[in-house]
Length: 364
Image (cartoon, rainbow, N blue to C red; front, top):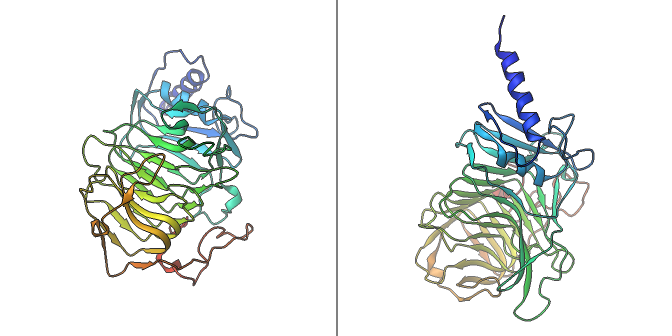
């Protein structure tokens, strides 16, 4: 008799029992891949986390991941619906080993390249948590990942319903996706849609990431303040990339390259109707190559310095090395699909300026 299936079932039952128990309980070592299912409509946080008994919140998924001990991949699958974060969903497993192949993946059940995908299928992440005071006003994180080898994929990420700038020198903000570990490596954020509205639900800064190996691809940033900030690192951040992203209507800056090493790859991106295209660090030490991309409509091309309250001062445009296949037009505009029933909602319309670069949610 083959005993392996019975052993695996036993391991899985141990895992289910442990994940459903008290947060202070000790977790047994698990050597198999783990999948947790979430559904905000029918899920409950005391469920097993299986497909037919899903969890309800990302916070509970984070708690369970953080208590596991073992190796292998962990996948968190989000069904469509609204996931309200009333506190930070912090993923920081102390006793689980991920690799580039066996990753922590937080992703939608249905992805843009699936044949039956529609924009309405995207799980919606919105922050409704109280904001804590800091030197610039108030702030909070949304999804925080403090481990190596993480993928976040297929989510629709909103901001928070606050008055972003209630007084001079004060700014209220949520950072929806954050990594603080200055020595962490390998974070990929792909096929996500970041949406904001400066008046109703400002999305202050969708991605604030420290450390190495940060890759942002096939994402759409629509009317957010700042797009991506490569923030802090104990050494210049290597192996970082931005490619095939569509960024429209930034009222801050599209890219902040504060910690980046010169090997940063920036290609097949379309930046349109932005306030500032690029903000260098205050020392302006590194230069960066821009290839096969378009910057169409902007107020300032390059600044340096800045922070939560301002965008710094004029920077050295020679620090950006534009290839021959880069199109820079100060007054140009793009044509975006605004029909919500269309599969390419908030994507560039086929055949229009920039559409040939493949920027947007679809990777094939």
